[in-house]
Length: 390
Image 1 (cartoon, helix red, strand yellow):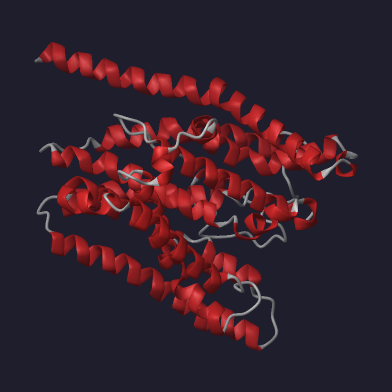
Image 2 (spheres, rainbow, N blue to C red):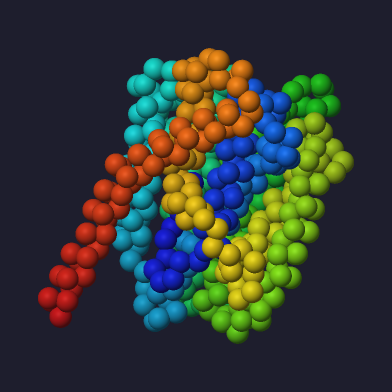
């Protein structure tokens, strides 16, 4: 998942959360290649619930991107929309397009057979119109689609709201987005999933296509992140009160995340009862819990913010390229080393990790960093030009 970078001091807690998120997602993806019996027992719960790593990425992205867009307003300025979109394109497209090309042109790279039409990946609409093939190849790109739609729309929404800013207007928009997501998920639950369940049809793919993947039902985490950024920037007195309670925020995060996981633990097996409640309100509860975790990581006495974990910054830096390539690499490693499954569990995991990190590191150094340098060079050139004109 792409991550924004803020100018100023780097928060160790955010690096820790990004590294935790990508670790959880990769362990979750291992279930596609051999099942949870390939993992040590202590990793099985992470494999089962590792999908929440994506939701954590959403909250982090909402916070970081929201901060980028809102900070200029706090200084009496306006963010440049072209600069924002340009920065996002330089940050995301080079590595993404190279990996996408590998999916089409490198033999044995795709983890399954049957790629969708290229336009679905190139237009970031894969998650809105899922292919009918049995396997959804490069399916994890759905979350990148959600973020791209978020990057496209949020600056425009902020621009409109900040013409005449008010707490009431912001609260109404926030509540409207949350209620919209609840309404959409409710509609598909009652009118698509439950009817299929009643006639004995398999509805797991319907759940993914209508509730889990589409942008319009997955805005909760991004929204919570933006709200957290807005509070920190425009209501510093509120933030100071919140930031004094880092431990309480951590406990609240644990409780809310546990509640959300309990509500959603049976989401593939039932469309009624607790699972139905989880489909409707599980995502906003999870997003609120993860927002508390992010707030704790940047608060005055939050545990994650106080501890600088070795390697967390490196993993956080490589998170996007690891996310793009990990599923295909696990597949490639299995093909290239057919006897790997005879090794110990720790041996297999070490090989997977080594290949993922080496490939992600090469992609970061050879593709991401050069384009980021070009991006920053353009920004510096524009700044020098403005100084010369003045």
